[in-house]
Amino acid sequence: MTTQSASCLFPVYARTPLRFEHGHGSTLFTREGNAFLDFGSGVAVNALGHGHPRLVQVLHRQAEKLWHVSNLYTIPEQERLAEQLCGLSFADRVFFCNSGTEALELSIKAARRYHYCNGAPQRNRIITLEGAFHGRTLGSLAATGQEKYLEGFEPRAAGFDQVPFGDPLRLEEAITGQTAGILVEPIQGESGIRPLPRGYLRALRDICDFYGILLMLDEVQTGIGRTGRFFAYENEEVAPDILATAKGLGGGFPVAACLATEAVGSMMQPGTHGSTFGGNPLAMVVASEVLDIVNDPAFLQRVRDASLRLTRRADGLVSKYPSVFSEVRGAGLLLGIQCIPPVREVITTLHEQKLLCVPAGNNVLRLMPPLTVTDHEIDEAVVRLDRAAEQLSKAATI
Ligand SMILES: *Cc1c(COP(=O)(O)O)cnc(C)c1O
Image (cartoon, rainbow, N blue to C red):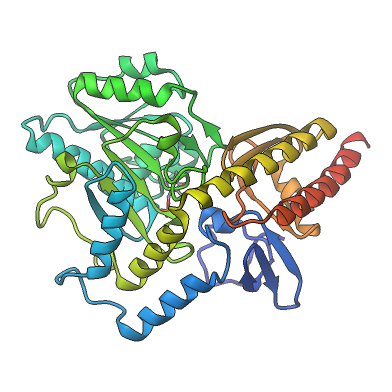
């Protein structure tokens, strides 16, 4: 049922037959007019829901002015978005690209280049964590380091060392004279919404400062308000040297960014990197508008309030259906529910209730509604989760 034998596409996705025609806010509509509550947000991409009027308007306006000019020229929309990102974060320099994996590739390149320019070219290895997901291109795939993604694609790119999740001592032991930096996700997304233990990022910052290596964050999924702060590192009050972000940045328009301190970013001199499409004016104006909306204390407070409501109710479902759900984890509107029946089965049952969620690794159900989700929509989603869980718990006892 999930294969499409008649399709001309690479069969790389296990798709369901669901197809949507238009969307509005937190709701997606099929051609037949069936309305689904979207608690997947295109995997944390539709940060402001579907068809946000302000995003539609800026995109439309820019589409009539200019689509593409090339990075041979000054692009004011890029300058503006970079200033916005630097103004709200640790960063002094930004590079725009089109996907999370590209932002990670540049993060890796920038870390190597930094040490090269500082007389330590042998410092070219990056430490990553078990359970990581950093993307699908060869460099970030090697950083990901998981067999299930690497199988059949050897040889893997060199230069990565992986250590167990959440153990700063084991990580420190892995540092050598060749280490350039440490790359982590503040909350591991794809492997099942696993937040780093409290204090871990601070410990990494101290380790990096002590050894003169770089702290690199993958905030592709956790960035742009998803955890209730603009970037998740703010929850720990620890600033990185390099950060990759993408998913929510364009609210659905493909755009990503690599952010860096002056010390790192200024080493990327003309000719050291580039992207044909990166920083395209269409992407820039949409992302600027997303930032204008998200980087507002009241907006971020609302994300935290919505999170509390959804977390409390999801905890209630864990108590009510112990044969279906066992734990709720995460932060902000990036929540994971540990499932007992196979998560694919949970998702199919939720589809019958017209609720869309996203599976993650280790049998976890990801709840990540648009950041604009209303209390009413949260309550409605919980009613649908409850109905699905009831059905699944009956099936479990038969
Ligand atoms: C989605 C994701 C990526 C890869 O982003 P793409 O845009 O699919 O290349 C990398 N890291 C994390 C943490 C992600 O969630």
